[in-house]
Structure formats: structure tokens, C-alpha cells
Image (cartoon, rainbow, N blue to C red; front, side):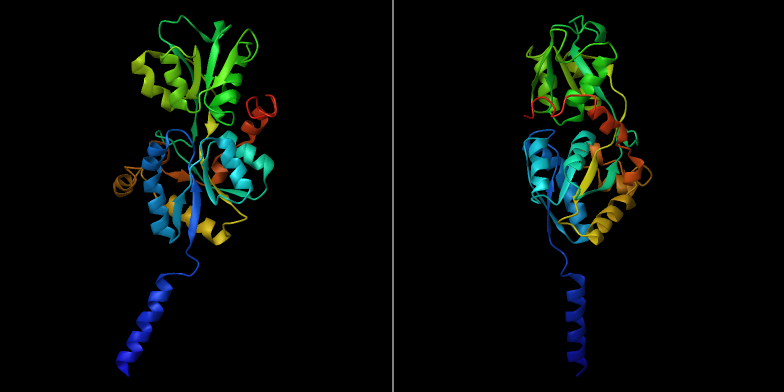
Length: 287
């Protein structure tokens, strides 16, 4: 009889340890690099959240932000890692979204900047960018049309005026390398990414204002509030800035999100939304 009772208890405990609510969540990382690099950078984060919450994160890949936003609206994505402009565009189109956390950068700040880069001996400065070809990342990239327009405005110049023209390279790396190869005269890229290519002869000639950090966004049509809360709790308990154990735990994560996270109210997207009203809508290249 005692053995029967013990067996019954073990069965119950096993059932409790594998909650029926545990399920697969479709996670879309941002399309900053190629698929292999994205997988390498985000696999650690996905595995961590799977282990902490019991929900397996299945990565789904998209080539650009527009497709991520479209799939999000069709409830084909449960979680997405987005920069500030893609999130503002998403929020503009769909109500069923909620920021889970906002990530810190390598300096511990929940913000980042974009830069204009040119070839070192080009003689170009912010004030003489006329009749040049700009290489941009993607239409919905914060460091693309929006940030470049904002930086040029400080010199009373325009990205598609003053004889200038632009093309979308597809990623920050391709935009920067396009300048190295002579395909573009200037590129707009995330400042942290631009540093990877300075040794190839690139030079920064302008830097944007600070934009709020990248965020993990949940689809509230498909993800329950208790699931969002468990993911938020798991990420906020990590403190790689102060804890050596946590620093080792996230050491193989992508540099842009292995520095800890803050609650969404620490990231104000109002300035991004305001900047969006100052450029053409739809953003050129999305038609």
C-alpha cells in the first residue's frame, strides 16, 4: 500500500513539474545579420528562456522588418526582438503588442546611437553631403531613413534632396561594406556596428541622438499575461553588470542583449514616434 501511495505521489509531482501550459512560442529575432549569425547570437537567449519558463522558443527568420511586422499582425509570431522604429511602426498598426523588457547596451545603457560613415580619405563631412549616394539598412531600421534624415537635418540637408539618392543594402554590415567597396558614398549604421569596420578605412562623420534600446515584444493575442510575466521576470533577474555568474551565463549571447534588461517604462519611444511624423509616410522604400 505504501509503495502504491509513493508511486501515486511521484506521478503527481511529475505532472506538476511539466505544466500543461508549457508550449512552443514562435520567436522572431531582428534581421541585422545573416541567418547563421542570427542563430548563433540568439540561441543562448532562446535556450535560457526555454529553461526558465518551460516554454520552448522556436526561432522563425525573416529577411526584413516589414515582414516581421506583417507576420506579427497575422498572429504568426508570439515574440519579436525589435529596434525602436520597428516597434513604433508595429504599435502604430496593431494594438495587440506589449514590450516585455528593454535591453541594455555594452555600456549598461538602455539606449544606442546611429552614425554616418564614409571612406577615410573621401574628404566628406556632414556639411558637404551633396550629390552623394547613401547606403541604408532597411526602411524600418531606426538607423536607416529616419536616423539619417535626422542627422542631415542638422546641416540643413536632405537624404533625397540636394542631388542625393539612397539605396537599401539590407543590413548594417552590407551598408558599411558597401562604402568600403565603393558602392555607396555614405552609410547609415548602428554606431556599435560601425566600429567593426573602422579598421577597413571607414570614418564616422556624424552621430545621432540616443534612441531607446532594443526590446522584446510580445503578441498579446497569442501570449498570455502570465507567460509575459514569467519571461520578464526571468530576464530581469539576470544582472551581468554585477554578477560574475550571470556574466558567464550570457557570455555567448549576442553583444546587443547580453548586458541585462530593464522594465519597458525605462525606454521612452515618444521621441521616435515624433521623429516618424517628420519623415514621409509610408517610409520611402516600403510602398
